[in-house]
Image (cartoon, rainbow, N blue to C red; front, top):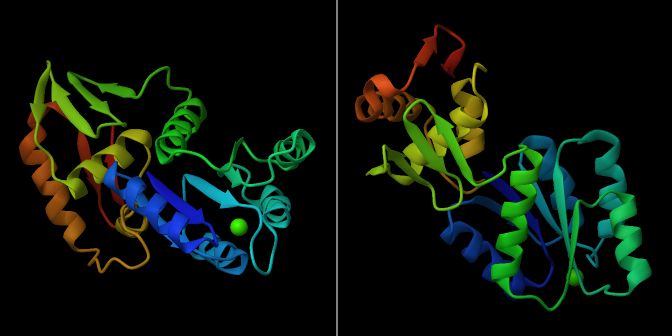
Length: 218
Ligand code: CA
């Protein structure tokens, strides 16, 4: 899952960025509203964590702009604006959740998981597929209760394929989803990861190569 984090307090931003990566998210972090809008134009994200008091464009203005175009983007506001009317205004404008500062980073992580789960209509963090079960929270894959070891990239790719079952995903699309803006990544490496997934998961998965278009898990 890919998260965009916009927070102008660098200490807070860097701490959150670290924690989100630690628990397995792909994260891009920026410190102002302009960079937020720009990154949303050039990449796609599952969720935006947005501070409101930002230099340049205010967070509320960003939400208004986004709600006109990025309908499906989940928005979690993190803000020092903690008055009831400010919180209601944030939610009414289009935020999906609103967390007041100060907070514990663990609560941010928990809310991110809850929002993603709700959005995908999943009752839990676990996705079942044939005899496999993928835990989107711990990023572990099990087969009849036995853990199958996947490295971080393999796990990100498999999760992305699972969440887009029966959809053709191009290499570029996959790369965009599993890398952050500062990652160096060659799209041809996707072929290697796909072949490793096929080797590790064997008959449990039906992972097709759609010539010239990409890959599809069905
Ligand atoms: Ca701020």
